Length: 237
Image 1 (cartoon, one colour):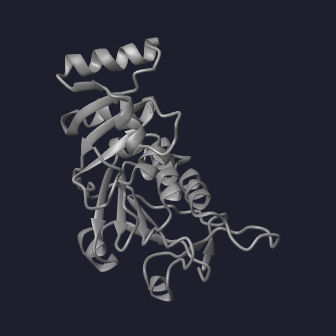
Image 2 (cartoon, helix red, strand yellow):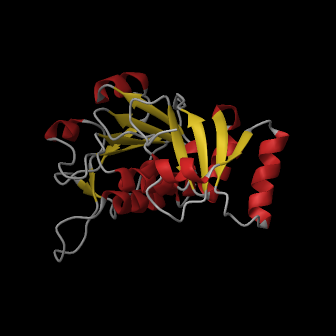
């Protein structure tokens, strides 16, 4: 085992909860589970061990391997899984992320999407590595319950999902989220990079939206913006 690298065919879950999410939702991709030799066998750990045994998943008790691949000393359980592809569902509600670059933000967005029952995430490249353990950890394993599809360009996404109602969120938008009354489904909520946002070409796509906030700050965090948008778009569903 070695520390995570983007070109590896495998990735890791660090911690009990995300590892259990991996086991439950992507069982066939699990290669093995590593358990620290000093870990106390609590009820939760025993459930994890039993699940592995029932599904013929290898368990290894190996302190040195865990310490070699993780950054935090407190990590006592590691899931090892093969990377996998998924495809978003057509004619369903989507979140579209254009060039996301922050791993913590992406993980939080994935967890938030699942919290609002949005299961389809389109990501436009270039983008952060979705299988980086930092993304997996920040998502608390939500990544394993979602359909996440990468696209080479927004045009590629649009051609396949033109029937969706497009809502790009941007500073030059013509309407505020607070004033938008008719929120049509299926929707695609489109968000740009944390630093640069969406370029002006998105003003010609669907209904552009801005989230109005006080002048005491210059902008909202991307993950918070998406949470606010999801609340408004799903509160009557």
